[in-house]
Length: 468
Figure 1 (cartoon, rainbow, N blue to C red):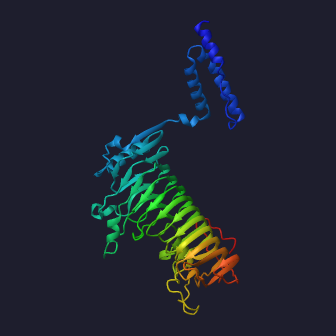
Figure 2 (spheres, rainbow, N blue to C red):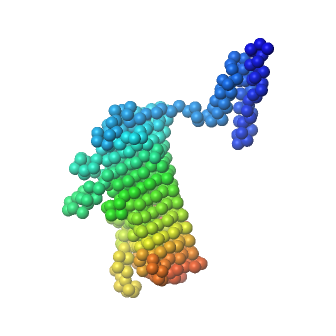
Figure 3 (cartoon, rainbow, N blue to C red):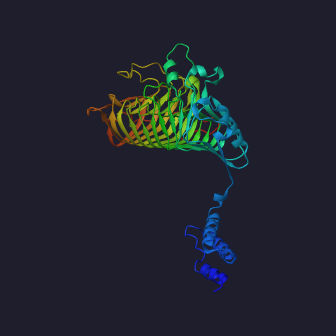
């Protein structure tokens, strides 16, 4: 048999593979047709192994058009970074970001593994021409001494401004090395410590699979940002570190914070300003200060926080569990449509608390309270569902609400909280109205009488609340 006949015979023993069932009928037809047209040409000129290799590549390219998408790979070493933890690699990161941001194709910007890159305060600005993936495989560290920071550089460390479609991942570490900042925080005239990683006016941000540790103050902050994911993170600093919030949300919406381990010296997650459509799920929190909405109404601000869902949490050894906090007087707006569900607490002080400025020293009776304020933030429609565990404080449930805007439509459903030593915990209510359903321990103190008050309209949409 001639060589061409043997090759042709071999080719016909290996017909084009059929596309998988998951591919649509139209895709199957086009892929199969393309491969069948390709087989005779290849078989006439190439060996069988080469044919099969090319068929596989063609098949993958037809089914996965994104696999052939043009991408640019940059590393900090391309821009002169040393990565020894001593040299100043700030310019290398700034130049690499500029190159990535101005590139026409999608870019992967790599912080290489086995390197420690010391970065001084830096703003990475957008908008950029295409999507950037910042692959942090090594370590990024801040200068250790506050004296190394310029006077105009002390509000934030790594600042992302007006960036869109950014993905940060890679398994590396961002280390604020905040120990000296914490030590000087109690000194007279000490300047506030900077935020470590701050996204401001950003959209389409994904931060996944990295460690943020030892922040100077807040570890990860999103301000006026939307469509955010902060998942699979490890956020840690010592329990006695000062003001080291884990994840801080300000004036942001459509935010998902999921599958995280957070252990800091302040709130695990805090939500302030005007925030909407926030989901917290599958978080281990503690030690720290728990999950906090607020403080709202600071400096007479009008804040709107709504549509917040918090579920599947384990909270341990924290100063609060799930907290809604406002100023005692002044300010306006609301915290409403909040659901805390499926939460286990261990040795938590104030497991459930609404604090409108009256709970530092709980009064023995309703007469021993401050005069009513003229205005306040409205707290309403807060649901607590399937919450169990142990309280480190006598009061496991505290609703200390405002005279001007009493809490309304609060709901306790299947809550079971006892003191750590097994003794009965107590509940405390002041100007708090709502209901309890199912087994509720400690016994609910919510007043059944409800009443209607005007709820401030949202200035940005001009529509009044339908429940007011």
